[in-house]
Amino acid sequence: MAGTTPRPALRPSAGAPHARLLGLGAYRPSRVVPNSEVVLGIDSTDEWIRQRSGIEERRWATDDETLRMMSVAAARRALEDSGVDARQIDCVVVATVSHFMQTPALATLVAHDLGTDQAAAFDVSAACAGFCHGVALASDMVRGGSARHVLVIGAERLSEQTDPSDRGTAFIFAAGAGAVVVGPGDEPGIGPVVWGSDGEQYDLIRSREDWRDVLTSDSPRMPHLVMQGNAVFRWASFQMAKTGLQALDRAGIGVDDLDCFVPHQANNRITDAMARAMKLPDSVAIARDIVHQGNTSAASIPLALERMREEGQARSGDTALLIAFGAGLAYAAQVVVLP
Image (tube, one colour):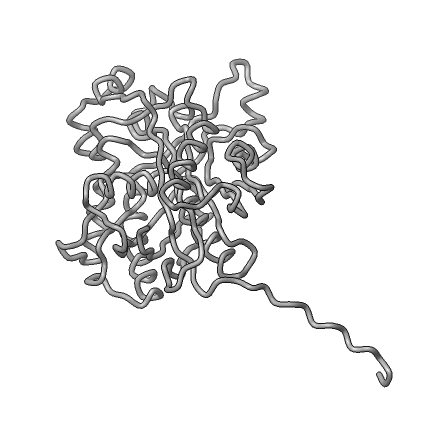
């Protein structure tokens, strides 16, 4: 209309041109649990567990190694590795399914413990895919201008959610925490994420009980995780290989350009099947942290990265493909340059 005063345009967010990983840190619980201990509660053997999963031992948290404590420890190591002060962190993202207080988010407590300057903080519940979801969100935040430095933590205490008498899961799950600092970069350091979910198959990996059912039962106990192992194996082995190749394509590289393959540490047989399906060359280092750590859900990829770096399989500047998948069925994959 004539004479109408034009509305002022909003100022655009001043984000960084690119995002990258600046630092990595991890925390492994002190208690080492060999297969010989796990088989006492199930009809199985050490040999069977190794053949089915590749696991020889796993880490379980002690009473003092709370989810909060492990998250903070991993985060502090990532901050030190990155050279970023905690007060420079603008957002803290914790990926976990082991935080049993409905609210507040674990991330708010971690942000406080670290001494951040009132950083935004929230949890991500995407099970084993949670860490990759967090990295994708952090990359978008840095490039979009809503944060300059983001701390992403994957932390689990699945030993509490494991039924020691369940032959299908008793030997799988473990505890631990891993973290990365995401910040601005001069060149692309985190490729486009390929992610999704298949809720029609949610029943393949889930909590056995609803909390309301647990609380009203005659003998309340912690809800345990259950899994249809064969169905998960078939789905992950082939569907996730396609997702990995899509992530490579979106990042503009091929399998020959990769230095490292870091899948969610669910099962060595799944890892082998994905590597074959993607036709990874022998030059690509493959993460095998599950052998000594077990399946730590959202913490498994940063823990695996940390072990690869410690053992010299991965170096700063290497290009790595991350793939994660789990309950939901939620999944995510992205190519990253290692800090």
